[in-house]
Amino acid sequence: MAASTLSEVARLAGVSLATASRVLNGSSRKPAEEIAERVREAADKLGYIPNAQAQALAKSSSGLIGLIVHDIADPYFAAIARGVQDAARQQNRMVLLASTSGAPLDEKEAVAAFAARRADSIVIAGSRSVRPGDKDGNAQLAAELDRYCRNGGQVGVVGHPVAGSSVTEGYHVVEVPNQELAASLALELAGTHHGDFLVVAGPEGLLTSDDRVRGFQSGLKKAGRPEAEVIRTGFNRDGGYDAGPGLAARIKASAERLCIFAVNDVMAIGITAALRSEGVWIPRDATIAGFDDIETLRDFRPALSTVYLPLEEIGRLAAGAAEGGSVSGSVKLRRSTEVPADNPA
Image (cartoon, rainbow, N blue to C red):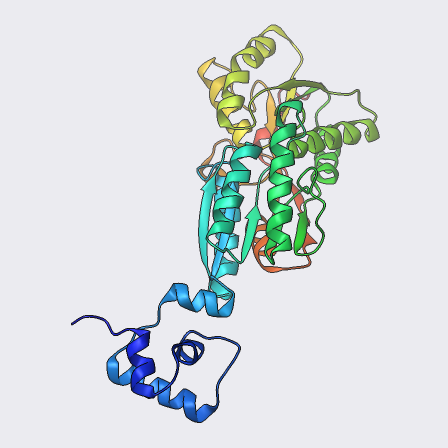
């Protein structure tokens, strides 16, 4: 049997099409209760099913949250996405997902696509970039976000504001103390490791990576230790793996133990895998620490020292708290930074 139309309901109830729509699609403009009841009875009699798109138009709400991440396969972003999904469930909303590899122009296109679908809010997770090559993309992304917010949209950004964005209404940032936590990690490691430190970071200009490098260096300085050498690679597992062979050669050539700080866990995992393939074992030959405490570390050996961040809570705050907020974290020292008893250096 063909589905009934709103026009048929209006005709049976003896009201205008607009009145029937206000009753059945959830508009804030309500007719008298006697008329509303007549419309509902007509809808029940005809078996009318309200249209979701029409309800969204009537309520000025689509029931959608747009989520933009760099890489959904990365456990860091997967955990944040779970938090966003939790917040969406509490709000009776659905999540639309875009994975952009961190390119501001691709993020801009995702914002435009979500705006076209009338998403109620948008969450952007992932390190902001101030690299020269991203300047134009940042400007276009900022303009698209400003336009979206001026039209009533809500935006939650994890970590740092989007470069160049000027809007304040409907825009909030969930602050993550990357610099402070990296400094705490350096202080802890300096208490047991007496050799050199080396930092494996993402490309210069990625703000999250740069914050963690800056914090680690400040922690070493506070501990009275020299600044660590920094090498740059991809801000992902493959980037860490690519850095591994060079690190392995360096470790083999030196009698002094090296402590490596990778600015995120997936980079640390990549480095450790590459070292192992070169016959260098953690923590026998060197030590390593990461950052984020992603869920997959439960199955990683040796257990990785890292900095814990409440990733799901970050997602919930970005998607739910209109005023933004901040989170805290803690240092987790594990097997990967233990010093073997026969090699106290």
